Length: 273
Image (cartoon, rainbow, N blue to C red; front, side, top):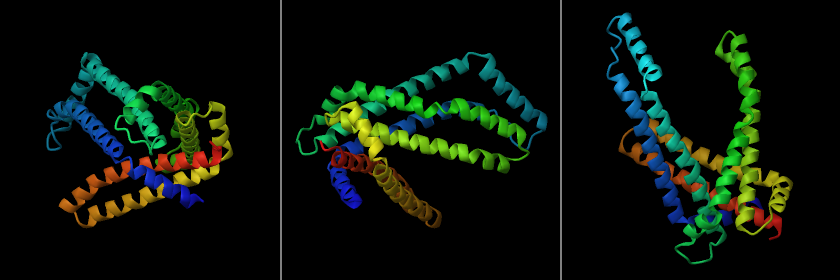
């Protein structure tokens, strides 16, 4: 049964190739903008870096000047404002794209070139609210975990014992975020499918195990592809490695859409809608 949902998800995903290209370009542009923004901050500071060949006093002077520029002048305010604007754009654009994607998967048999935009217009506000709520709930454990991590950091003499003490908390946090992701994925699928919120929650809690297994199966596929790409890059460094590295991002986007489509078919099989 699991392979049936995965196969249905695959056929639904490849039918949304235009959306996959849109997501790929979105991720590419976001990475480029973020890289240029960081470069605009770091590069002017590094141009004044004295280098290891000079005296230690010159290096100390460099760090003192950099700290003064970032903390005592208004230059950091513009950086914070730009970073905040980029983050806000990300927090709005990502759920809007999700709304269009979910709508396209739900109406996979409908031939309408504007159905992605219709999904953004119809479900956009709902997905923005759910996206922000999921982000808040995902980060909420940091309120308790980070102080505990600081206590462990102060009490341990080296990094290895600290990681051993902190790893169960980190593993629990990752598991919590994974379950939240599946629950909100079910809510989004239920919304575009016309289901009630309580019904979607009931489906997600009752069938959380098959949803998790399907997600882990696709994660293992993604991990295998990443391992092959990395191995090729290490063995055959050059143009082939560069092409495979860029193609991996497109494949990763395809796997994300495949995962959503698989969860969509699984949800419908379990919900009875």
